[in-house]
Length: 87
Image 1 (cartoon, rainbow, N blue to C red):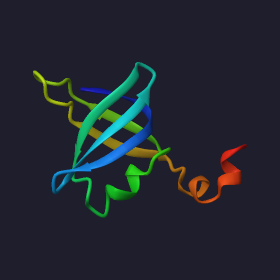
Image 2 (image 1 turned 30 degrees about the vertical axis):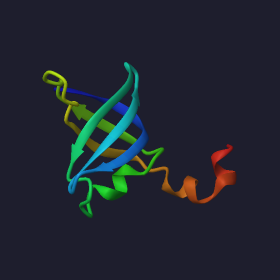
Image 3 (image 1 turned 180 degrees about the vertical axis):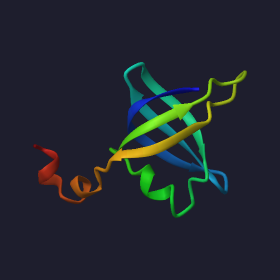
Image 4 (image 1 turned 90 degrees about the vertical axis):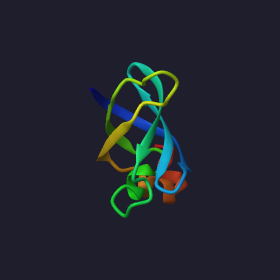
C-alpha cells in the first residue's frame, strides 16, 4: 500500500456507492476508485481542491486502484469566495 499527500482534481460519482477521483501527487496524476463516496462522512472529502492524504493499492489487471483518503486541509471556504482563491 502506498500513501502520500495529494490534491483532489476531479470527482465523479460512479454506481450507487462509489466515485472515480483524480489526484495530483508528487508522482504525477493518479486516477482511482473510492468506495462509500455517497456517505455523509466521505462526501465532504470529495470537494475539488481539497488537500488529502491518499492511500492506494496497485491495480490488478485493467481495474482502477482502490483509493482511501483522509482530509489534511479543506479548500471549501476558498471555493465559496472566488477572490480568496487569487491569493
